[in-house]
Image (cartoon, rainbow, N blue to C red; front, side, top):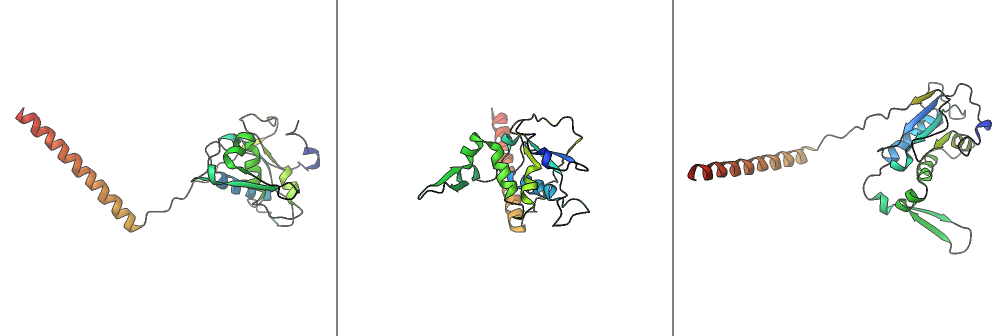
Amino acid sequence: MKAIAGLRRINLDGLRWRVFDAKGQVLGRLASQIAVVLQGKDKPTYAPHVENGDMCIVRNAKDISVTGRKMTDKIYYWHTGYIGHLKERRLKDQMEKDPTEVIRKAVLRMLPRNRLRDDRDRKLRIFSGNEHPFHDRPLEPFVMPPRQIREMRPRARRALIRAQKKEQAIRAKEEEGAKNAEITA
């Protein structure tokens, strides 16, 4: 019921239902793609003052990944309103408590802070597992664009090639020593 709540306030005519699979995806890269679809920037009719984004359904929120040591180092802060009540929670603890909130915060913080932000938030539905209640809708799976990996710098490439040649030379000497031992035995 919570997933369906608020759909009456959204004009669903002409909206596409995009499904994002978060399994194994990097949190920031996934959130930026979702933010683009929510704003409608992937459409030729985009205008910053018009709400024409699509519905976004995110599955497998519990299986997202982060790079580096963010799982233990990233901290979410909030204040209760009382003096000295600044609360904090690490990303690892938040993933255990509610993994959908991690993706929601990442996406909402990438959206512009204006009057359309609440409407865009209503179009985002996140589920920690694989199941969702929107099977009766025409769903389109979203394909994440491939990561562009930067080519190695020349000095690093040369160092890698030297290390590989050194390993090959060591292996060749070991094989030679093993053959000599077999011949003498």
